[in-house]
Image (cartoon, rainbow, N blue to C red; front, side):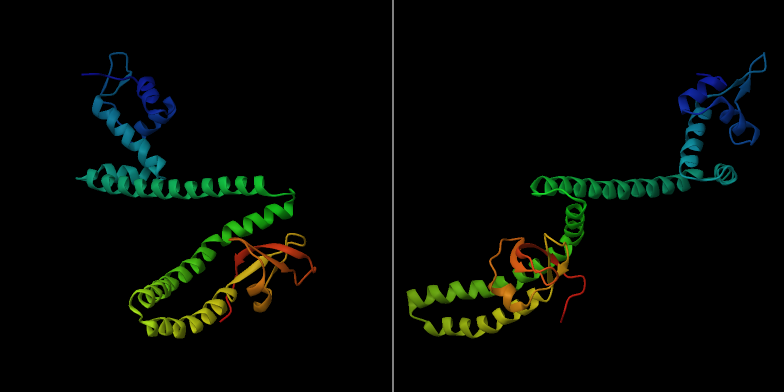
Length: 242
């Protein structure tokens, strides 16, 4: 059966010799035996115990708590629970870091697409990225409510052409007009725009926004702050109007 000196067990566990000696004086890692020359010798079980102690220390447990835990009749069940908690903590940290990495990659892509680099540009990009989930929610709600209307529209057209059921198209028209009014009010009450010149977040009039030229993420508007007229980046409003 293998025996380990203080230096060997310290190296295997990634700690200092003084740490191993300290755990001995605290009574939580007593060597299995002493050599004829008085050197501490540790067994395989001692090595396993030392690794558990190091793990518990990494979790932030104080020495007194570790001593009490290891003196329990069934310390394994408690340690298993701690392992599960540590695993979940690490998964949460990995998730958080992955989110940060995705934001960093998105920031790099946005900076490549920016015509002029400035601190204001970075601020606009950061605001847009932070705001993106809220804007996606607005688009998702429009998509969900629009699918039934679209199905009804095409079904009514097909049935009118093939079966002559014109009244179904009339029904769609009766529904579509108020829906279009609601969609317009809903959408423009929940979006705002960032001016590329003064970097102000502003809300245009619904009439101007409705008729303005646009892309999936921009709209050609007149800034209410500096008067610049051009394509402005769309974001979700911090507080939606109802």
